[in-house]
Image (cartoon, rainbow, N blue to C red):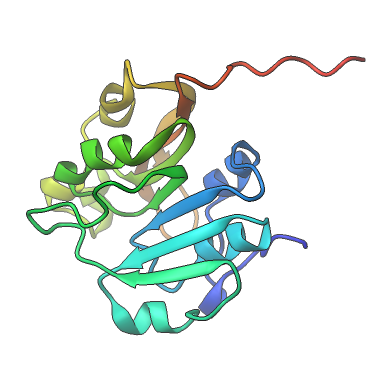
Length: 188
C-alpha cells in the first residue's frame, strides 16, 4: 500500500518523519504521541505498522478511530503517573509536542532495537509565534543530549525552516543501542 502524502484535513506528513520512515519495519508496534487527527498514525498504518495513537483530544482521535491497524487511546500524557507504564513499542513518533517530564518515560517505552523519530519546536521559535513559552521549546542540542548513551543518533538537525509558516525546530532520528547500526551495506 502506498503511504499517504497528506493526512486528514490536507495536513502533510512531516518530511522528517517520511524521510526516516524506513527505520520502522512493517509490522512494528508504533506509538504516535499527541496524534491529533492522525496524519502520522495513518501514514505508518498504511506502511504496515500496528499503531497506538494517543492524544487527550477525543474529537481529533475520533476522526480516524476504527481504521485498520490503528488503536486510539484518549490519554493525558502529562498526568503525574505515566499512563503507558509497562508497555513497549518498536517505534515512537512525536511531532510538535514537548513535555519534558515524558521524555524519559518515552525512552523507557522504546524496545532495545526500537526507533525514535522526533520533531518539535526549539528556542528561537518565539519570534515566529506559537509556541513561544520556553517550557515548550527545546534548548540547543536538547534532543540529542537526552538520548545520549541510550540510543544511536542516525540523524539530528536543528535550526530555522522557511515556507508558509517559518519555525525553529529540532529533529531527531535514533535507534536503540541493541540494533546493529549502521546496517550492513547491500552487495553491489
